[in-house]
Image (cartoon, rainbow, N blue to C red):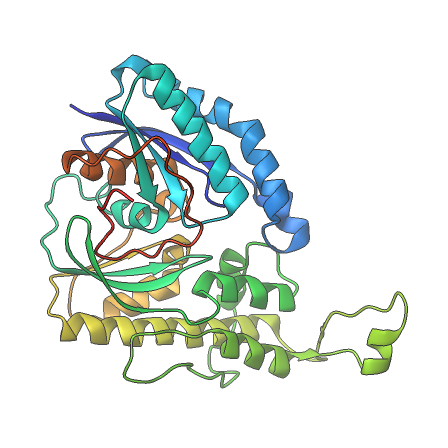
Amino acid sequence: MTYILGIESSCDETAAAVVINGKTIASNVVASQIDLHAKYGGVFPELASRAHVEAISTVVDQAIHDAAITYDKLDAIAVTRGPGLVGSLLVGLNYAKGLALAANKPLLGINHLEGHIYSLWLTEQHREIVFPVLVLIVSGGHTELLLMTDHGQYERLGSTLDDAAGEAFDKVGRLLGLPFPGGPSIERAAINGNPEAHAFPRPKRDATYDFSFSGLKTAVMREATVMPSAEARRSRGAEKKAQLRSGISVSDVAASFQAALVETLVEKTARAAESYEVTEILMAGGVSANQALRQALRKEANLPVRYPPLNLCTDNGAMIAAAGHYRMLAGLESDWDMEVVPMWPLTNDAYENV
């Protein structure tokens, strides 16, 4: 059996987990910073870095304790090196370097997006996934459509040209005065709303597999809010935020926005799955927790659609450990002098020792 410790600190969760043989979770500890960032309506990078520093030692020790092992039993330590917030990534990477050096264990630098993909391997312990598969990654910072032909082999078919799906959820949530994070808040509000109440655009409806959600966000702002006048914006101490229009139903706007975003994601994903003749569709990332998206993709795709349980949709150490297991099988130990890569696309060089 192989034991991999995974450490994740790319954004606003400090997480660590121990995974056995790349598929079985022995422990999974996550310290969330949602309450810390809620008042800002989004992640405040400097506060995130400080919170990681405060939490990481406790989180890693708890993961080892919960797995009922000692550090010397580990076969390797996997850590997110990108993409993500620079300060947050540095906390996790430097801690992992020190730990690997002290315990004399191999160090594995993992792409955060690849980690999300391998969350699916943690839910399919008794079934081999047959390649090629189509992967839809939908999270706060990323919207990617990838063709995965083998472990570590990816072809990017399309990605967001501006706001990611999760980012659009957060921004529209703020416009509607809903709590952070926007995804779960909009999903809850949409339950009682009419998805046809507002005719929001389906952006980037073309032959490509790229996405664009900034225009959808702007359409919601124009439809549902009133911006303060130029004179009010110039006034000292004036409230400069957009205000909801009188009589606007938050539930209707939430439902209509969600419907537009989901339809856009599903339409392109289903079309790509058919064009590339894949065996199934894997969906991962925080937005993959959205029930409307899950149901719509299952309905439209003529293939099996797989996604993680809710606790593995958001950032966690288990997905990093699982990805690390397959990197270790490929014999790819990372260099000790590796640095963080804040912008790191997932392509066919994913298993290159860069």
